[in-house]
Length: 588
Image (cartoon, rainbow, N blue to C red; front, side):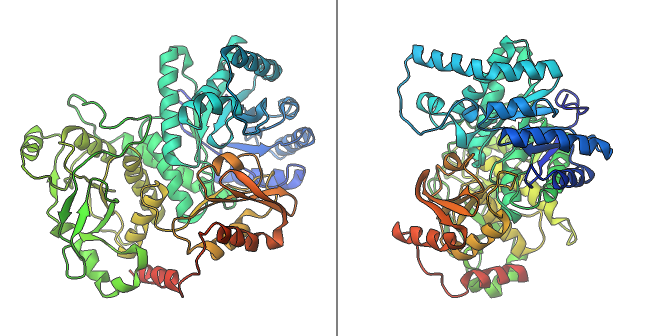
């Protein structure tokens, strides 16, 4: 129970979000919380970076209850156990991050002996036990929330910056709680990279199953630093949606670099989509072994083949093997955009579905599979439209039963949309969940969006899914955190400024972080980072190393551009090319 809200078991999947204002602003905190609750948010998180902020939670909670708002409140704690102890007096749940709750992160390389490691665990036990005792006394919950970006030096040195390190970090704290007879806790395994996040949650579930039936604790799902707009929604759907489809997850939070109120419709749609898919018919035969390692990413091996482009404007295309994942269109949609291919930039279709010789298969039909596997030459294959099978299951089944030399074309739907008025958000989330989940499984050599009628929107969605899944980087990649009370600058306007200045830098990854909490770690695979260091001041990073400090916010974007130049990754934007491509897509 989190306040009056049950989490896990037979309860529905719960929706969470976080307010963005300063925790010391009591009235703004109350107002934002009520707004979220009225929008359907069932649990609200508020940051408590200091003891002073934590103490003010008393006034926020009292104000909410006086106004008739009973939504449970969660205190978000990172560095200060003292703040956690204060917050636990007033809230319904305390979220702690094992990576920095009792450890100071210095990025030091230390080889720990078993004795030294045990001594560190004992130190953590001493720091964590008082909070567990207090939460036990008050009957409130704890979230043991591991972040890929803030694993402790101790975990990093023993397990690396890996899903296994994330799981072990959380289990260390869970064992302490269990030793004290406390079980009211929830796990989370958040990362900005959907592949890492998916692997971490799957690994956690497997480890909990190994530990025994009394380790069945609820799980909170989220992709950190997902970003904004379509990109943020796509990345969230890939990470959260794919796990929900696997039956994993009891609460979710969609983290967007936008006002928190915009997170709730996305979260609702993800939950509703997963619920509707769970009611579809399932495969009744013997389940084959998974055609991928659920705990680490490796692309499915296939042969490289050459297919026809299918139209005069499209050349023959290589698919499979080491080739990048390709983008297909139906002939009807190609005909609508053929006159403007030269203006579509990086969003062009690469082949026409009807003319590429793709073999459509019912993966349940062993005779069809046997005929395909007897062919001398590898063929591009896909699941036949119109089958009554959940889509992700259908393609996993195909990959499991067919000879691996055959490349696979993924679809977002097994029916072609006939509805020009279809809700694009739902189309986006379904396509991102289905295709994104399979790509993160390592399955797929080409993709086709047929749940969206507009050819321009379908192509843009295709490429953006490939980018968000880390499968095909064709534009600048941004890792941007959602705002909260710790944020030291306006994330939305700052992100817009940075994008305006750098959107033409294809393949460059830029992290935009409001504070230092997850910054260095989540920026580990970013080329450059822009991080709030103090009010009005910004620190710039190369990778996870800070190289420029306390830059005035008014100068920081220009200094970021200078830093990119220094490292040889800057080039001047071509005149109006991105704008022309967007206009061409919109016209479709």
